[in-house]
Length: 98
Image 1 (cartoon, rainbow, N blue to C red):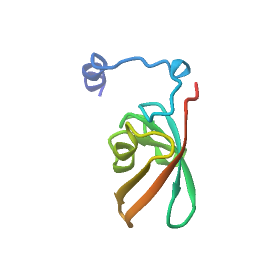
Image 2: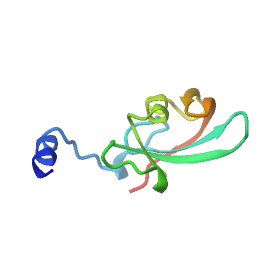
Image 3: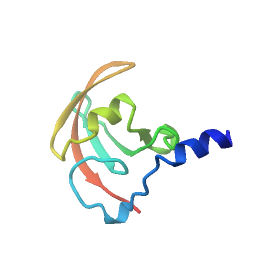
Image 4: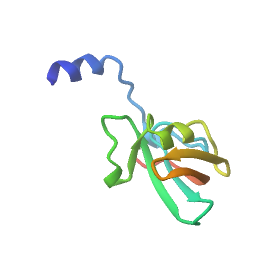
């Protein structure tokens, strides 16, 4: 396990979340979306696959929702294939928390 972590560390970049200010969805962003069919809103923080924990509101940038959100902006609509079917979301806000 230690060897695995050490081999991945050489590819890590440190990102200062406090320095990020944008309405574009990037790694580390906290994004609130609204399900266009139900009106329900959800908030996700986009992290790496090793850090993501959906029970804590974090998702992987490699997940279907994470991939669909990356590079989008507040007000954009996305369509995502999830286990329950296709879901259409509108991005309500993009924030960065330290």
